[in-house]
Length: 340
Image (cartoon, rainbow, N blue to C red):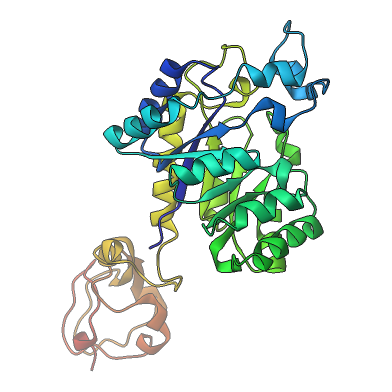
């Protein structure tokens, strides 16, 4: 059974505080996630100084004025954070990961030898970025929020042209609204991506709660990414749409349970655990009253009762009209050896 990769997205929920980033690592490890992921960027390389916030950022940060640049500048990770956070992850038994939003950040993450690259939704139409990240030669997870199927195809083709084969790419279905309304999830689009492009798929979830992420696993997701926070009331663009630590743990448990539930052969047949219940739960033919040897059985002589330790009711047509080879008592199950 292939294990679903669970990425606990800390993102920028550290609010620019190293100590909070460390606590997020602890919470992700405690929840049982495979990776805890941050975001690596320099605001100057990411956004125009006058760019306004997205509506969701304004809604999630009521009362906080300022540009998107000013918001992001406060959320940068310091260069000195990386060895500290990477060591913290090692100590806690979880893998460190970060999304690089610009060329310099990608180069930085290469220096720290992260296991694979995660491309955020906003960069799916950024050809120079896609080429730069592909040339690093690592496996890639590509988020597809706001994208149509042709844009995803184009991005995958650019990655392929730089040497990353499709079997090394996982495309995450995603909706870039925080939180995502349930009516806009369109979860079956994940399967459309898989069939149309021929890649493994997963789901980056921005809905409230854990049910959509777990449903994605049942539909074939091999990677699940989910934002989490220590406190949804903290200031910041993503806290409101993030899970709390106990909810993250519930999601991990649910995903692992679903993994087991869909890991069978796919053939409809009794499982080892239920075979012992066949005799107890099913019925067999029983006689209604005392009958003597030589009696010719009729439908009125028979009833179906548990346990299934006699002739199956499916064979009643073969029983009716047969002659008893011995006396039988009321309520006893009928056996083939009772028939002449």
